[in-house]
Image (tube, rainbow, N blue to C red; front, side):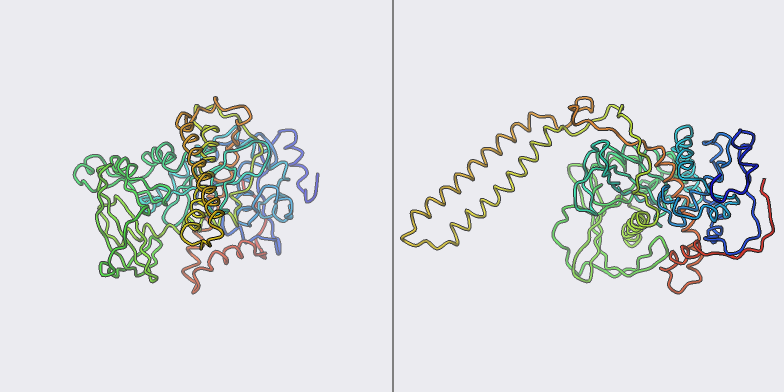
Length: 519
């Protein structure tokens, strides 16, 4: 039976399919390892861990039921067990006592059941249902949404995923881009995964905004929008990757306002234009900032935007633009400068919840009619950039030779020869660049996936298991956040509330509860 198996009769019945699952039974025990995680059960249930699970998932008859499996995965997340494989390094019997069972499943059993749930169930609809519930429970937080991309790097060799720039590594690496949608406190609503990343704006247009238009609660109706020309449905906050006046105009036509940092900001504004204002952040914190505001008109796109700048102590001016015509500059600054909450979310989830870890080793063929970058175009573009870099260095060398080098009468001939050689190299490079640029013009930048050469084709990772486990981790994170919110009310050092919650989860509790069996 294996270690810690004490409920032999039920295991036998489960093996022949006579029971659907083993019911949890709790006993009076002392010093159960990590029993403090049981304090998270109300928060997990309030955040929907078991609310819609029966609607979208089912398991064949066996010892471990759906509820027990979900509790195992949620407890593992809260106890900082980052991967399914890492479960084997924990005491199976001790964790089983927390669940009301004799032991938790083995890694192989966990993997098999996760595979069954992700293939026969519907993780995407489960995640969508929970997202709608979270938004409806906190409509104020759902009014301003934060969108940012996060790259999950893939180091395997089963397929050659497209490369993309990873800011935290400062390298171009193979991987999958996840676009997370969070509230202003950093709590996640849902995530969209893109194997072929066409950019944040494309993902916003195609995947995120259409979904939000259907799901964000409390949106004004058409009559209210007609009565107030500045009223908006909801707001989107993102970084400079999404800066596009044309996109702002498209969104405002749907009455969606956008907030982002401005690219290509012009000359600094006079310091006398800035006034100190009190800024209240969505989490309730307050700060004093020097702010100034002007209107900026984009003639090509025919749209007016509000540009708000913050003057820092060092004299640097941070510029942001928005189509929010209702709120004052202080409130808009509070929205925009709360982006750190999502950055902290990524950092925290990578370190404690393992959102970057590989979940499923399965791949599938790409069947959708999608466009990808033409490898020939990419190679030509790379050659041009390399040659232009070399040309720039040659020009610097040529200028330095002419203006700075002292010419002795004996070395005039050598100087002329050196100068003409560098000039010939410059002219040759310019001709080569022009030739390659002409070839690049005739080469299409994008082609369909089917037109890719066989050695350039790749497969996409199966996302169902990842989406299922990510949803469980989102529930666990939101449950932890709600507990942290309670703890902060009684702490002087509010920033240490998460560390305290983690310590509570890992505490060995002494229990005097009598045996109780749950149906």
